[in-house]
Image (cartoon, rainbow, N blue to C red; front, side, top):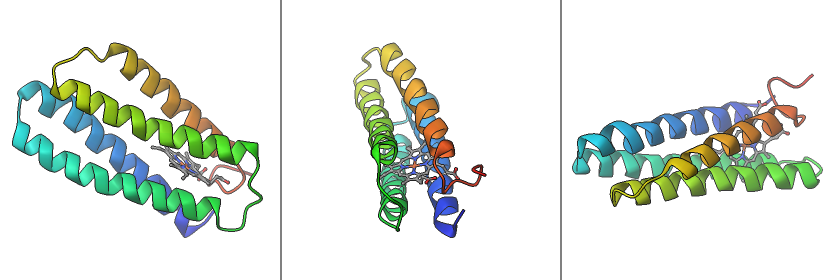
Length: 122
Ligand code: HEM
């Protein structure tokens, strides 16, 4: 466990909350201006997730397949979030992407928790 693990967790928890607000409430309400602002803040949090994730990755662990898998899953989560936001803004259906996003979030969190730096690891 490290300060950075906490920073990483805080960053993706806030990113997920901002994403849900932008993709659901603000999108349905058609509040374009508020959505734009939330999306801008969300992108800042992607950056925090990426930087804190990269610091964990290159902070002295032995990078193996599981770590690479963790980083790829994390990137996929961000990718799906952006896809849902882009399609949602155009009014396109997003059901499949929401399902995939939820699966990837669960896998990312499960693998993150399994890996040794975690606050849940033994
Ligand atoms: C929204 C996307 C992401 C989610 C939901 C997520 C989730 C998590 C979770 C739950 C942990 C474990 C923390 C703990 O047990 O205390 C973790 C750790 C970690 N994450 Fe992420 N992460 C995301 C994105 C990323 C990205 C993009 C990278 C790489 C650039 C990354 C790299 C890492 C690394 C290296 C660890 C440390 C693993 C360990 O040894 O415990 N994560 N992440």
